[in-house]
Every structure is written in structure tokens, then in C-alpha cells.
Length: 242
Image (cartoon, rainbow, N blue to C red; front, side):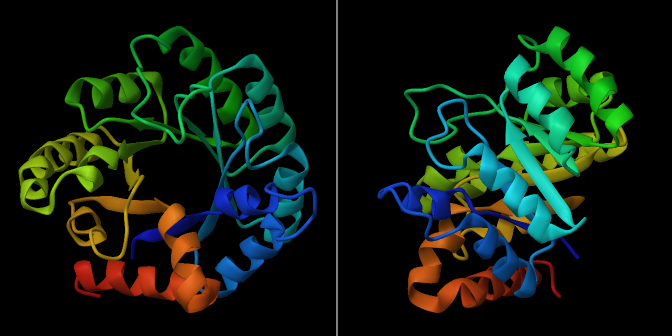
């Protein structure tokens, strides 16, 4: 079964519209796990536009040893936070202050040196390292050379393409997933996926994990958070014949 990790950043986005403590990401994390999620994903951005430092610790406490996936930029500050939090997984993502959300995959060529230092440090802590990349054969090979555990393919371009054009984008994902598995890497995907478009991505060979945020939090307005998580799980299971 494909693991479903729920990104609860936008619970914090809603909270931060007012100077209040509600809704709380930790409470959302508990509800998602009770609904069948396999883990919780948080992106602690440099500008703290949604998740804040205290949220990371509060969610970790609620999870009580279950999977916390900390998305982070490859900066000295975030590496130090990772070393203190010791998440189950650290997912390295690109980050620009002017973007609304992550707009593409990490350039592993440009950050090869920093990653080669981070990976053994994370391994010493017992933290898995995942890199958020485009479905590029070159970047899959670099990821394997760096010794990361997992590659997460950026599905934003697939999701934003007209429906009629989406099938033409799938071979790149399929080839990258096949190579990743051949090189001993776990395969994950995320960004922009909804219950309507997740099927072909979930059905890709070797797909082990999906990270879903905006769609589940948005759907919770209509189905409740429990219902939104269960609907997404059902869509994933249907895609893989489960």
C-alpha cells in the first residue's frame, strides 16, 4: 500500500490570518493520523509564513514516534533545527521568498556539496533524507550518488497541465521511477495532486509515498478533515487496484 502523508501547512496558513492559536496544526495532525494517514509533513520555511518552530515540536509530540516528514531548505539554520528535532524524514526542497508555494524541484547539481555534508549527518541522527526533484534521470542518478534514501518527484507541472496533455507527461515520471528503484531509492511524489488527478501518479511503478497538502485541507471544508483524508486514501487505493 502506498503511504499517505498529509501536509498540514495550510492549517497554519489559516491560523496566521489572525493573531490566535486556532486552528492548531498539532490537532490537525492527530485527526489526520486517526483518519488513516501514515505520516505528517510540515514545511518550516525561512520566512515562517505558515508553520512556525513551535508547531514542529507540538506536532512531533502528538505523533509520539510516528512519521514526521520535515520539509526544509538546505540552509545552516534548517540543518540545525533538523538536528534538534530529529524527524523521521528530512525532505530537502528549493525555497524562494517570492513564491506562493514550491515551484519546482531542487537543483542537485547546484547543491551537491551541501547535500554531501548533510546526508551523513542526517544518517548519524537516524533521519532519512529525501530530495524533492523533477522527474529527471540525471537528478535521480545524482540522488543515488549522494546516498539519499528517497526521491520525491515534483508533480506540479503535471497537475497544472490541461487534462488532455497530462498523459504525455507520465513517461518521464515512469522512467525516473524505474531508474530510482533500480538504484535502490524509494519513490515518492507530491505537489498539486487532488482526488481527480492522483490516479495515474499513484499507479506509477514503485510508488511508495504521496505527500498531499492543499487538496486535503481544501476538501476538509466540504467533507471534514477525517473525510478528506479518507477520500484521498480511497482514490489512491482505487488507482492501484486496492
